[in-house]
Image (cartoon, rainbow, N blue to C red):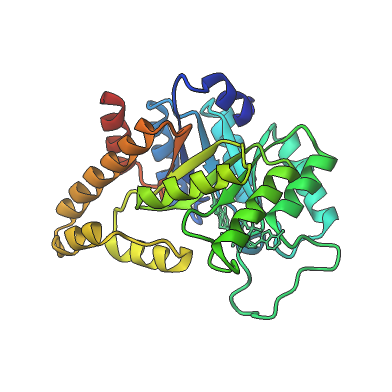
Length: 293
Ligand code: FAD
């Protein structure tokens, strides 16, 4: 299977990449739904599909299995997320072996969130403090993998400052990350400012915006509160005005995402990564609409 870095460099400047993110389902009904979702979205010819990794390794086997299925059963390029929080080097080497034997070549390499129930958490002495330490470990031990990393246009919630967060991105690049995908954001100006400052600091890797279409307003307010991302007043007012009218929520959300993606693409971003939350309908409509323009 292709490495995403190869797809990015082949497409460079000529066309944007489109990718979808899923989480591994917990039960047979969720599996059935995800199977149908991937089948539907396959028609849109995504450049790749990524599958998240549950905090603390809760979904380890399911993540690997779903990435393998997406590659083998659907013929699509896929990427496995992996978070190293709490892991020791031998465990990371073991999962890299699992991924390699499943034919997986792309990893979104992350530190992961701190455990919520342990405010004084410290990684094992030979563990990984930051995403960049995981990235340099994989690069050193298994250079054949293509590595993605996370970045934060609205600053990672734990960062000491915006400057410190950007400096850590430069360390991530030096550690060997191939490309970066942003945390979700709704305000493009925040992305443009972040990208400009990252470039000024010498970050050269492709930075792909991560976009989450809003299918459920309550759910999105929870997600944004956790991730530190803001919802512009214009959007929150429009969504609040919809009340319980779910069809209107979807219409407002679709129009907003289409405008957001169009502006990003007009400014030359290398691609759009859709956080789908395993729902295909809205993402499908948005992608069809932006490809039409
Ligand atoms: P890091 O880059 O390690 O940054 C974490 C904090 O440490 C930041 O505040 C940063 O400023 C600081 N820092 C970094 N390096 C240094 C340094 N050298 N010195 C000092 N400070 C430093 N979570 C999941 O559980 N599963 C997933 O599948 C998942 N997928 C994601 C996909 C994307 C695209 C993104 C953006 C996030 C994803 N997350 C996922 C969430 C992610 O795990 C959390 O945001 C996590 O808190 C940070 O991981 P990271 O590797 O980006 O952190």
